[in-house]
Length: 622
Figure 1: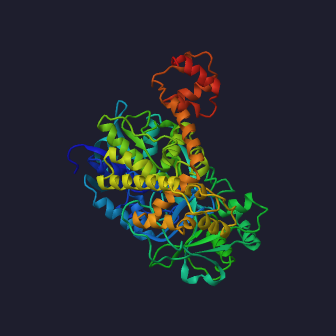
Figure 2 (figure 1 turned 60 degrees about the vertical axis):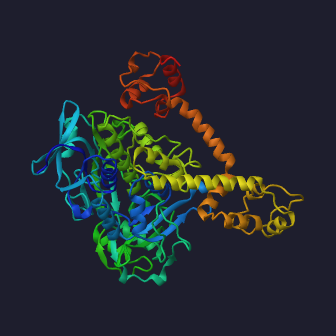
Figure 3 (figure 1 turned 30 degrees about the horizontal axis):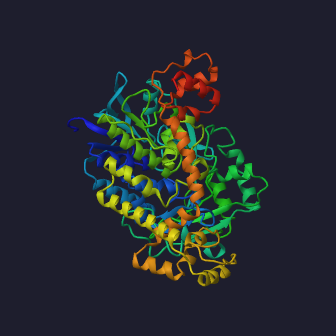
């Protein structure tokens, strides 16, 4: 059935697998995507949304690097919101509400139109390894498929176990069976595994809800989009709604705690700290009399509704009775109850910074198999694993993003350096250079890299060059163009800002925190410049950020440069830490386990202190 040897085999068709397959194939590798069900490629297993705090930045980065997630999200969006606009631009995060079925269809369509990509439906139960090098995979039917590299993106399917109250059964997702055999195969090779838990809320019939009792949450008046390509912003949107739990709801939920797998010992694995179940919320936050419930439509043409904030594994009768006591849900009809799922993962400290495993050459892990949670985190890992699998078989150096280059770089560095014992979720607070890593400049940061790799077209590169040039020229205009005192004082009076006595450069006014770009466009000189030079709103926004936050940006760039000096001090793979008597036992143990690629990575390992780095500097002759 399979002639010859594939360059890359991707196991799993979720967000990580889809991005990995697309990246490898678009770079020219002969790629095979193997998944248990071809009808669920790109399926949204949990909430019907992409983006959010920090996650939106990741989607923009994926798009800037030539991935598909941003385009798919734009084509299947039913609502767009830019979150955190009351804060600084480093915190602005795009998010779309998605049409679940359209999202998966768009993924399938785009993958089928990708050259060099084949598909096969089966479960992978084993991998083929010779010595310490990957040679292929074996399906549940016993069919060997040979490949030079393999990317595992198994999501929650590895020995997945679904819990609803005191009932549990094997499954990787509602209505789909678990994947078995692969965990044991990897463990036999020396890999360490663990168990994690996640959950999902009930899906309900929107026709049974009373939206008049809820608070409407419309999308942005002027919606933007994710992709830097020519996808179109929404012309119409669907609203979400907000309601709340109550003490009565909490009491009804507590009545089922004795049958809750979270509290009766049936679930012992760790769940996501920042996305707790409703029973976990009321147990941990006993002082809170209510919690928000986000009522999210699942598409344009479906009545199915996702009850965000009500994730639960309580018995179905408890779920039903409690939800009927939520305002607007008094007559609710269930499509399916919520559930928790436990699954195997492999601690990511077993990976190199390319996401290749340390134990088996040519074998890569991406997504929830590495202990992450979230579509966006998974998709970004899949993209990087697909790129690096292609580079590996062509004997090119791995592609690694630094912490000051992308949120994706922060994510992967955190995973391989610190590991995780609970589902890892990205936040803006995890990025020390978040003023540099904004959602608005992802194309400026990363598309030149994608162009060099071969994932971005010349047309996209030209668009980025034009954006950079226009922004630079506009910033220069504000720094060199003087303002009229009378005109500027009229504006400053309206904004309760201190008047000026003499003319100065426009940038001095623009840098004031209470003066926006919209205020500046009311000035005759600015309006004329924008009109004559056909400056878009995106360029004006870039100029505003660069002028207002110039000091912060410069400081972060200097700090990043200091840290990056340690990046250039490489540590050999066979470096013997045990021979350094000055290192503590803990330092030796952790350095031997993680095997950092350079001193910068070594400095970020938990338990490694500055004196340990000094010892390494001396040993490395620096």
